[in-house]
Image (cartoon, one colour):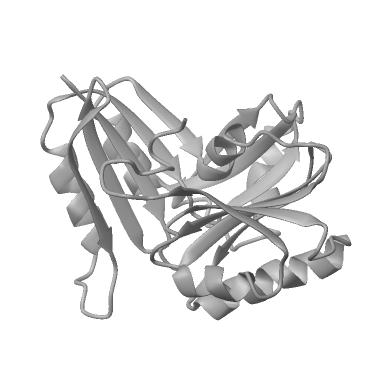
Length: 240
């Protein structure tokens, strides 16, 4: 029996099938101008129909989320809190919660209900998580100012840490690498991080976003590419 891992991004679906950490199949699907209606749901149906899985791991990188301190328990406010960041349709979105004990934070986020129900209806052991929580678990902060950037296809998420304390998290849908750069540098100016005394760490789709990285190097002094997504070693699907 195999494990299925699913990653949902803006207009995208990635999956990976593995047995004992050996990847037997993976693919990515992204909506384009020529995509038919319900393109991603059709692709998801095709993956789930294989029905030879022992367990499923689901990661949402959709930018319907909010960040709260660990222990916040007024879960009825989850939708309202998310609505400060993005429009929320309670009838079509399932409210989810992911807790990060390492940094004492928790994420409220949503998945489309049609997606959530399709997966739950399989009645298999399933773990749902938010990409920010999983990404944060891979970070080991030091006693310095740091920006950790995880790149996707037309999307990025990033954490700002100051001496091992999370200062800010954001998850952005953007259409160009110039937008990536603008948001990162704008964030630096707002939180008082200097471009010369901040350590930058970059993960994820670094090859696809090489223009962003080359431009970022012009503005910052300390930059390290920690992990590049390559076939059968997808960072967000394989937490280290």
